[in-house]
Image (cartoon, rainbow, N blue to C red; front, side, top):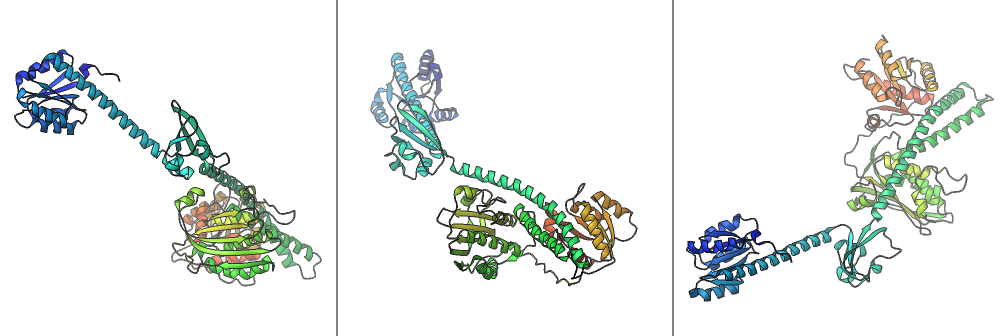
Length: 614
């Protein structure tokens, strides 16, 4: 142990004899000690309190005017527990000194004090103080290390050079699943199996001769979250591509469907080309269904949300499902009678059920069992840790379970990708589960798959409980004949073919049509047109400005104007929220002339607020 120099050690001398104080302090200073003197017990206490660590040694007379020396020693111990006490006493009080030695100190001096005896006693006391201080510092260091050891999130094992475990922290106990007592009977080979279920990062360093510390970090959750993030990013990128393709394709389909519809309307039943035109119209309708699936996957549909009882949806589609899956597959339902409502589009929810049922049917070519289950579920923070983006809270759970062939982990990782299929050529588009994923995500839910080869598959779909009931928008029954009108309509559409088609269709139904290619063109028409403009029908995605930005400016100029949005999809959250709330009129592309005529008439016939003027 390295000794501190004498001048760095403070000795507190307490004696009511001023001459004795001066003599002892002079002797101590000559020996390079720092001497501090006090004539009373209270003065000594005040001095000790002002010191940062207290005196190294206290030389205390037992006979003090204001308190007993033994009492002072106890008070000094409370202030600085490491201070070494040397009792200073006369011959008459040796017995008291001996008693004090037994209780509170380690040495004593009898007056008159010889300088050599004084210095020797102080040196021994200083050595004891240094040793005790070093021991206390080591104890505190060990406590700090133990605190770190016990609370670090990585698993720590202390082992000898043969691998036998000497100690382990709580994280190591949690990782291994054993108590500390059990771990101390094991070796590192026992707690670090080569083919474990955890992905571990193991590092070791020498702590002392023959002793190693192993740091084990469990990367399983981190790797799983990284994989989920990568999958989510991939799905998002593919979704953006699918949505963009669907948008452009819907514009083309609107033209094809509209012109084929007009040709069918113009031609009689005996028209030689009627069959060909009908084939074109049917193919366009099938293509429109395909783009709806793409839009569902890319989460760019505009949904009509309402309070939905999932049990009711399951019950409604049960008959259809029995016909769909065939007689060799039994269907059973287990529905929670106290199931909470959710906020959803019932049509899209039916699509989710149908797609999952078809997937289950195809996984059971030799027959089997299909089970539909609903239940209320509370998802914890732990669930969110396992599944990226899943918020804890109250959900309803819809499970679709089959007894089919099951899936490998590799298939599960690609399951929701569009056009990915394990079926043979011509047996599926690969969009069924991608559509499920898109619909569920757009409705604010989550879908997870649990499967093993030969043990069937379960899809679990979670939707959050409905907290506020939205107003239900009931669509009025449309008359069979397309309605006509004479109002003025501003049509804003950047696609040349669609703009020309829209103007022709609306003009054929009696409307006065003003056409604009961009939002800027539309605003100029609004500013320059002298007559009324009753309705603006605008595409959502256009160059220069979006449809909602255009409408915002138009409404400032003409507050009473009616608005109809048209699009194959929308990324515009303001417009989408308006449709959900029932505040915005929307026509989904592709559409036919009759569909356009009905929608325009319905919007124009909405009651006008007092004071509105177009």
